Length: 161
Length: 161
DNA sequence: CCCATGTCAGTCTAACTGATATTT
DNA sequence: CAAATATCAGTTCGACTGACATGG
Image 1 (cartoon, rainbow over the protein chains, first blue to last red):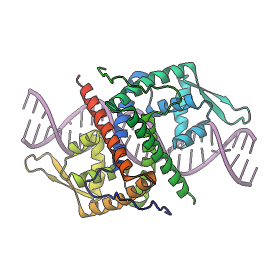
Image 2: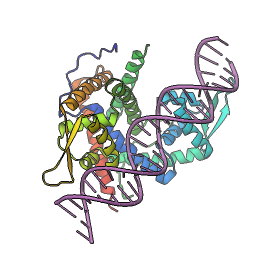
Image 3: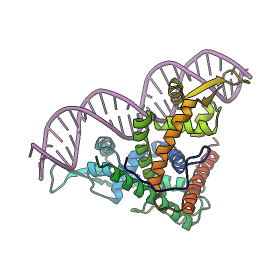
Image 4: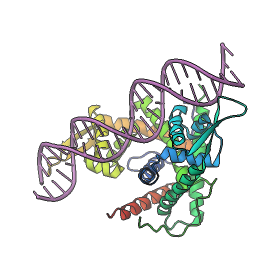
């Protein structure tokens, strides 16, 4: 473990609420409710919906690329992809330059379902952000994304076996 | 669905990064790494370690109380509790006023393991917060806790069947 | 009787590791 | 041969629902 996080003034005293603990608690509340609503209204799991939204903005990704972006194994992502393809929400075509790679794109129905999922996400975000100013919202989002980037950078730097 | 999230200026346009998506992505990165390190160094799962830290600050909770605080079912929490008890990290005693309720407390060994887990959490938080000022850290934590409270409040208000 | 608690059983989700085939 | 990709199989973890006993 060659990590040198630098000196921090926040230690792990008992009774204190940790940032990692608070994030985990919030995410579990979000995912639980999202899972219930996506299952009930759209018959989708959370990973399935997530893959739809990623593919919407990054059309043509392969299964392996999707898995890397999502920080899961290709095997885990493949189950998600297979379910979406079986329902006709995505379609896969061989890449021109490489016969083995299957590029994945949303179908029209896939886009329609993704938009309906957006409304569920809108509702939950609305609940989370009641009374929060746009500036505060932006700062919050920026903090989350920054933490994610730094964590992944630190982990990758640490991975040199 | 009697929710009225109020007007927000942030809609779900394609290509935009949603707060909920960013939080989910960050939490998955955290949990994945935490899971690997807790398993390797302490032979603990993430829910087991979480339960230890909750019991450390709130000693004497019953299984049902722990489950409600963690937003999982009593059955799910019971597996966690059983594993910790089998390893001697917690002990359970009948409540004085109610024979059926088992109050749960950390053992000395449980406290020792929890402290070693703290160091792992410290390292990961250090990576996430490289170069972040204490003020920014506090604001970030406050935003997360506020979002969690408002989300749960909104969901409870919505639960009136 | 009602309700909260604890617990047993079975199920399902969503990840994992291992192994194998294909393609460049 | 090496590396990346896809995919089959088996496994584990962590949640769920249902059923049921017990104590207040």
